[in-house]
Image 1 (tube, rainbow, N blue to C red):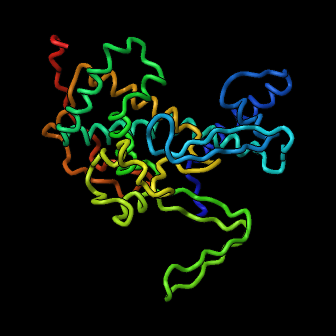
Image 2 (image 1 turned 90 degrees about the vertical axis):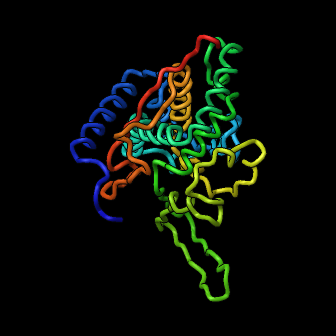
Image 3 (image 1 turned 180 degrees about the vertical axis):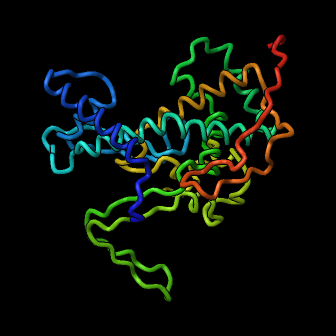
Length: 299
C-alpha cells in the first residue's frame, strides 16, 4: 500500500538466495527433513484446513490452528510460491528474535512495576517445581497464572499493531447504525486489521490501559469476545512461530524467577515511552531493570 519495503533490499535478497538454493538442492537430491522449510515446500502441493478455537489447550485465549492436509482436496492454485516461502522464512527468523525480545522486555516491565503480580507468579512457580523435575511443553501448560500474565502482556503490548488480509471474494459489511452505509469489498481488496486498537478499546476491555492478568483467568477468559484478541493474528495465516514464542517466554521466566525478582532501578522509565518512528511496539528509552537475588534456602 505504501510501496515501501519492510526490510532492506540487501536483507531480502540474502534470504531469497538462500531459500532458492536450499529448495532446489533438496528437490534435486530428494532430501526431506523435519523442519519448517520442508513444511513450507510441502504446502505448495496441499490445501490446509483449520480448526479454529479461541481457547487453546495451553489455557490461553490465543487462536490456535491445527493444520490438516487433505490429499483428495489438494489445490495447487493456493499453494506457496518461492516468494511466499521466503517471506515466511524471514518472518520466522524475525519472530524468533525481535518479537521474543520485545515480549520479554514488556513482561519484565509489568512485573517490575506490579510486584504483587510478580509475587503471585513466583508463588505458582515455586509450588510447581518440586512436583515437576523435567520441564516440558506439557508441564508449562499447567502454569495457569504464568499463562495469564503472558496473555495480558500480549494484549497490552502486542508486538504487532496491525495485520493485513486479502479478500478472496466479494462481501458486503452491513451497517450497524441507521446513519451508516454498507461497505462493499471486492476480490483482492486488502484490509488492515488494527490489533492495537482492538486490544485497547474500552468497548471490549474494561480499563484497557491497566495490566490485569485476571482477564485471562479460567473464570473470565470465556468472556473475551472472539476476534478482539489477536496478538498473533488468526486463521490459516496466523503467526507461524506463535507457539515457539510462547514456549520461549514461559521457559525464560520459569528459570529467571527461580533465582531473582525483577525490580525497577533509577534508570527505569516509568511509565514506558513508546517509539514513534517504528512500525512495531518498542520503548523509546530501552528497558532497564534490576535483578534482586532471592533467598531460596527454605524452598
